[in-house]
Image (cartoon, rainbow, N blue to C red; front, side, top):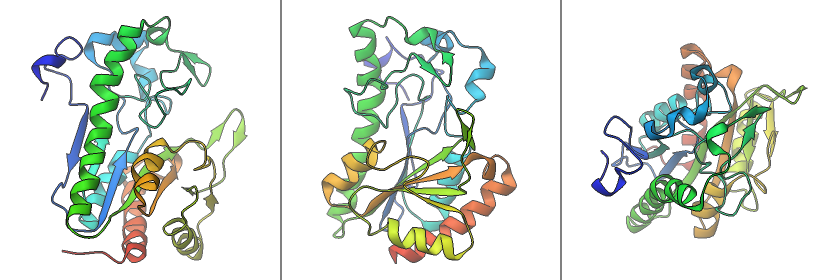
Length: 258
């Protein structure tokens, strides 16, 4: 649903800036999915891109939302997911980051992001970035108010190669200074035979704004999971990885409550 004051940016056919799935989930865990959607607000005209570009990894994290929704159901925990493409604004970057609104990605120019006015940038921040992070913040506080700080896990996916270099990992666990979640997750996934990247293909020290803002700064056990897109580009793969991660995460957080 679009509020009246948002009509200068959205139209009624646009999805909301974020969605909360299983808000009443009892498990002491909050899932987030920053790059869940390839959607572009209709008023932005696809950012000048062809529709086929919005099916690529530069527009969203392929398979991540489907896995996150399955985990929300299996573990019985809330999920906050984004409603629009990372090409409009990257919700996993600080507001002063040069790639908050990128002009090109993987050698593809984004015409609708070039020469933006301050007002145009502010609309994306006020109508997309801030509502999404406010929703995560609110869910964290609601969980904390229930008496026990939740764990926070951000679900992402990565392309199997980038810049001509292969990325061999099945899954990566991204973390910064707090290893309460990352260490047991890495260990258990490796024990199952998976090629697990420890802060690979990205580092939790660099590209983890959401986890650091809502998890680390609030003292919550937190990390990001990066799943190889090749593993979750089909329904079979999505279901298989949802089963694996559902069991492993539930075991690690000791909180599979009904």
